[in-house]
Image 1: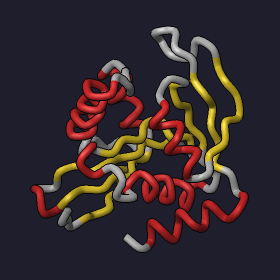
Image 2: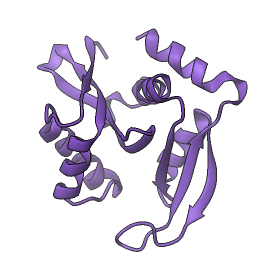
Image 3: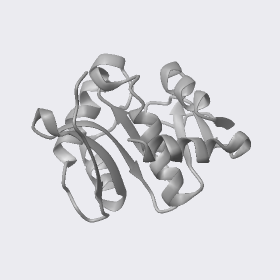
Length: 162
């Protein structure tokens, strides 16, 4: 796939790309039955957080993927469009978070095996299971990016090579 990628940061309080991020999140929800949130919750979290994103400049700044991150390095939302998955964009987003925040944590629905496999592949470990974490009663794993084997350095190098 030929893309001309641009990395951007949306600072807290700004709304740039919020509509595109919502549309991407909803497309993933429809396709994979994950990332179920109310729009108001999503927009509020987006506006209160730092958002790292990639856009495809060859396709009218189409949103490739994004990570919505709290001040403590907790990833509230991480999404990569289906057509760009497997290209390293998710890893690069996590690397950016790790580079800026050091510590990286998140939750993943216990039934979202794709997300869990992705996170574990890049060095996250399951810290604990939380029953009834989600509004619909679904359980979650709390995950933390490990420091063993220099995973943060590896991801940071991957990101800087983009």
